[in-house]
Length: 106
Image (cartoon, rainbow, N blue to C red; front, side, top):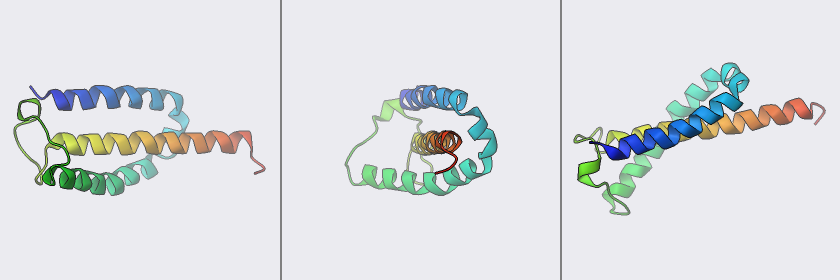
């Protein structure tokens, strides 16, 4: 069983659920931008994670990850990177939209 992938999904999905609920209008208004940010930023983040694993800065426990690699790294790394980038991008855009609505003259 890939418990690391499950933990990533649970933790990130909880944050994603909260962010989507709170910033629903932002998600609708900026869905192309969010998709682009995930596509552009998740790849370098996953590559850096892969480097950290190869350098021995941290490691996966073999029994807790999917038993295959994708471009030299476990797929959970890419899942984590994409979800984190999406969550933080949505959060930043949502806060910026709220500030713009509250203070339109600034």
